[in-house]
Length: 493
Length: 107
Image 1 (cartoon, each protein chain N blue to C red):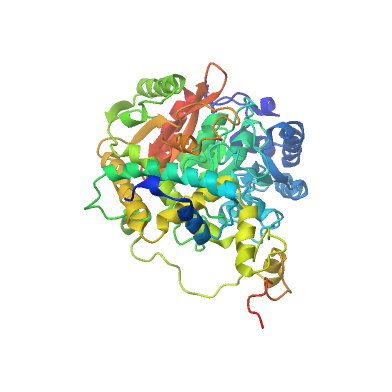
Image 2: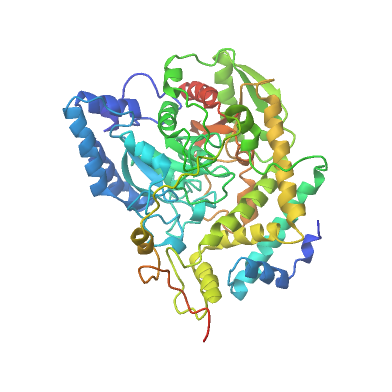
């Protein structure tokens, strides 16, 4: 279906070829060239053809999707104005609640659990006409960078099935990259949208903390968790964000800042002429794969040619971001995951003789190794005698990291461009024996997570081996507009 | 910060008990080793002078005051909650009114 509706304009040469984007889909449905039912049917055909190998979906809801599509087709037939995501087939990461659908968080401990309510982000998507296809695979409780920590088996990279799709939103990235969905929702706590987007060659947005309500997200680390879209174009990411963003009385940390018209801004085609783009030396040092470096430099050359001013800058606390992140994230996770005790939802260890024994055995049987590893570190960091040395220290370093960014945004630069990950996608099994090596690869993404700023992963081509590579555009709090402008300029090459 | 190499198997068992994790001897060995190596790594933070730095517990303090004023909590008004039957449907063992668990008090 992709080729039939491809039009002139976005996406540009850096976007994946022959992909279906939201404006094309909407135009096709509005003009009667395709029905929402056709599009959904094509998605389920793609899923049946490809997902046996890729394993992006953990559950499907075809009947529900066809009913949603029929409603859109009814509106189109009646000549009603179509909502912004009319008929857009989406997949939802399985850490987000959709009433009546399974919510496993990639964990055995929630096997068989059915969500009793719907996350605000998903509700807003569906109210805007999106059609939910199913729930997407992820690392257990979003803890991982490869999708290999899913209790239901790993997702594979559609570009190279012996490689990981990244994580933890690996299913979300793979579903869009394989053409099984037009957009998906992922979550990003330390890079879990941006890194899989880079590995799979799609666009992934980390919105500013508070921009999108977290209501209905199964919490990993509440001060870091964010929900964002993975799409085939920067404009699609802007469209989905525009629908999802905004204050929600059900999440006290959601922001009341007005939601700008992101797509209207992009349609004005202001480009990047005169924008100041920062390049932090700390993100281009030792350990950066030469092909990833070259890809980032190509993107910077393109921005320079488009009239942006490229400036070196220093973010001196960058190298402390990974240790600070892993202390804060695991400390919060150890508290958030205390609720999985076999009483109220999901799995309960059978035959436990006592209540405390049931808690322990449920958690030992229900959680995978990575989740236990992080709970142990987080519990240790919060335990008596170590709180100041670990947890408080990490929060102090977090302030220094945030101040690094706030010092340069506005005063020196409008946006920052960096690699997303030190390497393209790696092979399945390559890093599973060395958890610390896996953590270190989060170096370029955990900084924005800790500072609460927004970030976008945009594809910039492939390695010689054919593996996608993305670059990251960072913007200050609530400045997704600048990030989208820069992202679209990179996408156009 | 304490010398990280000194974390013993008993320390790991203590942390596992705090977290209500019943680890097998193999898990204690492997995850204990991982904990040791992570604690060795995060000790890098000691290099940063944070004496005069306030902890940043939540990023919203960086922008909430300027953008939104003081009121960040919604009005305290009762709203409908989930139906008991819907919640009980998701639980491993209930009598329809309460969650059932192994006996806590022996008579």
